[in-house]
Length: 289
Ligand code: UTP
Image (cartoon, rainbow, N blue to C red; front, side, top):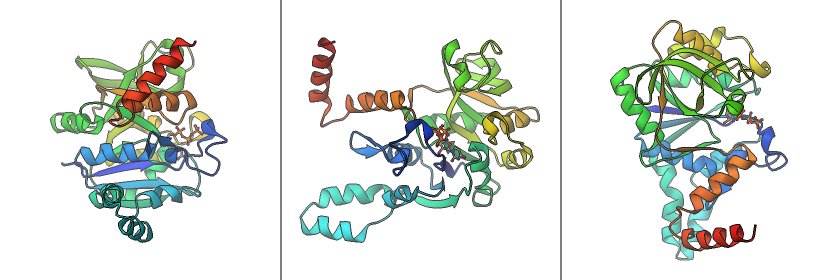
């Protein structure tokens, strides 16, 4: 079955990014010239998806406004002869349908996804975390859609991490089928040091099937008192084959201060307008340290 919809949960409180994220959603913080969330929506659009479902919460209306048509701004820009800028701003909202679902309490990523069950219905769908950026030649979602056409099963995107970092991620233990593709045997959310030999960490891209909603319904609060998507995925993996995919590209956790700074540098070094001067500046700064 074709994948037509993508869920982007943005209802979290962003405590790792306080105080910046107190009044401004962390997903709206700027990377060069656009907010983090716009890069994620652009990845979805570039992968050929037709509809995005945002899971939002109180204080996140700036995200919805960013993708809405602003008649007043449109008029002002056109009066000033800034038609190209106007077209650029309207471009994304014209390309994709956006629906919003409200998560009333931040009960975890698993709960956020569960709130979309009536909008998603009985079809496979993508999930992209609103603060996880992937820089790649082929959009990460598109890579996953290609694999899904072959496997017709749920897929989680993974990257290798160092042993010191495994306790920050959902970790997959699996059987390698071929380079970059694993059948999942076990999954554990943020394992205590020394409790897993695997270095395969789940990142913020998932391709899920609607069976996940029944699993989430039964999932009790796990790590951090939240309803964990990883726990529901593990329950599902016991019932049917599920796969982990080592995507090609670089992932940045833009919900974390250091990850956000790394993302800014990576995107600025590839930006057509600022890259040259920025590279020069970085070299000068590094020479001084
Ligand atoms: P994170 O744990 O990275 O986000 O969740 P957070 O809770 O906003 O951030 P910190 O840890 O307090 O700094 C991953 C994704 O899941 C969403 C977040 O918005 C983020 O995109 N999320 C998390 C929800 O939508 N609802 C939740 O209850 C929790």
